[in-house]
Amino acid sequence: MRTFVTPIVVLSQCLEKEACRYNGQVIRDDFVRELEPFVRFVTICPEVEIGLGVPRDPIRLVRIGEGRRLVQPSTGLDLTEAMDTFSARFLGSLERVDGFILKNRSPSCGIKDVKIHADAAAAPPVGTGSGQFADAVLERFGGKAIEDEGRLRNPHVRDHFLTRLYTLAAFRELAERPAMGKLTEFHARNRLLFMAHNRTGMRALGALVANPRRDPPATVFAAYEEGLGRVLARPARPGPWIDVAQHAFGFFSRQLTPREKTFFDTLLQRYRAERQPLSSVLSVIAGRVARFDEPWLEAQSFFEPYPHPLMRLDHR
Image (cartoon, rainbow, N blue to C red):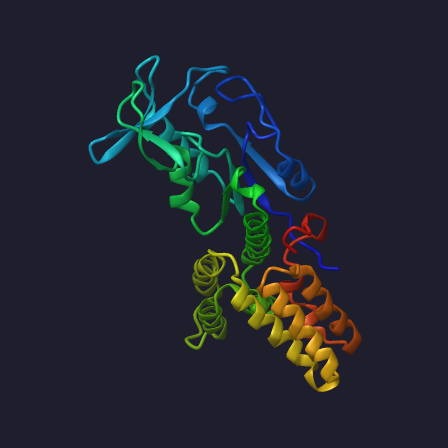
């Protein structure tokens, strides 16, 4: 059983926490409730922080030439500078953070699919983008685990978010006291996970760990953090994931019967065809790890990238 660093997650305050939405409501969210015992939430409502009340008249993003503004149509208030000032102050105060869960489609917090209008009146949307606060989040913390609560209902998105979140939290704790030996251990422990997400990026991280120029640990850690964000930017696809599973299973190839190998190959084919869950393949590998006592594989985060109670059968 792995131990995990507790991630620090900035959460839109209207999600399960406070009735601070524009209409005075709180949004119930199963995933936020499920996640709460395993993380430390930092809650924020940017709209309340810039002085808007609860309830309040809606705000919207309006396209002005090549740019856009955040406005409140009922009052004519332009809130762009106020939101940008708050965003810079709040985000600059976050000494430690691993991820964000923000309210979807919100003109302040939405990370995508936020409506952008032609004017402050009743004109229909002319495009979509991210909210004003979310823009600042993505610019400053683009390498972190960032999602909205709507997308997190998708099991694949949720699995990717949690994988990123807990890997980044482990690295963040490591980077607080940078030491090359610890980084070497971290990279080795996550090697299969990185291989499944981005084999080229995994090799680039390995080159940093080798540190042939003997750069100071702080320099290596800074470069590694940037590369880590790129490696985990996209979910692992079935093809690379199967390659990693076959690589892991190869540790036992000389000790297994032809029938056992055929059985495993069949599982992989069924998984590729979406007729077999990922968990069944992982269980077979885990059983062989225990049977043949493979400590390197047993330590791999690939098999348990985040706490087991957060895993769901609809993906794993």
